[in-house]
Length: 238
Image (cartoon, rainbow, N blue to C red; front, side):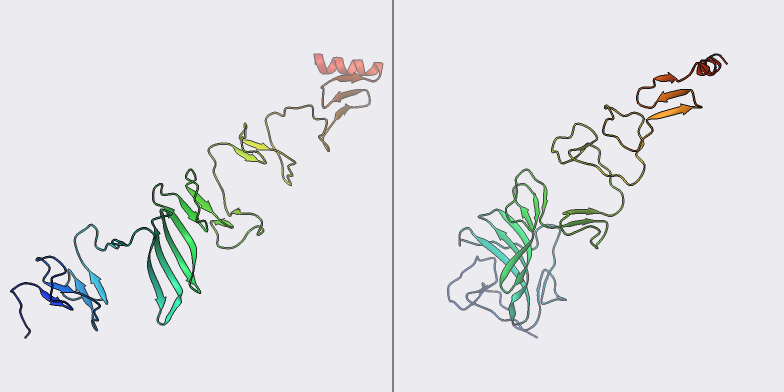
């Protein structure tokens, strides 16, 4: 039914132990397995099947090779120039999930190890910025709702607890606009501050009959004829 070895480790490719006494199989050089390999499981369901208790099940490091990049590459058979890549760069201190396009790494998602900051399309991350995105960001949709020159496009509502600045980095009001504003609908407010000299298409006066005029900007009442006095007296004392 098989061979049993109990007197020390089995050494393959060498006559000198390359591991420790607790390792019953020690291989020096390459190895080929035509079937599946199970680690911690007797009936592996995949070419490499690892089973164990919660914790670290697989660890990859560079050994004594020094600093640099360590990659896990996933490609189609016989097309190593195209596929996906998971990389850790110990010099840049950056963890990357990306793709391979003609052997060139396309850095889709980058995470700084020390801070956890994320860059999408960026390899140089600002230590104070949690998320930096290169290109257009769509929220609540997968279709452009604006133009390519608009890096943030939101479909649906949005909530901002602080202040919003348009054309300014330090808004002092809930909505602070530097420049012109254009509204196609109704603007409603409980009060307006300013002289109103640049406002257009608003009521500037109210005419009561033919004798009394009330200014819309100052509230001043103008009586145009003596007969208007009687009308005013009726309005005031009625």
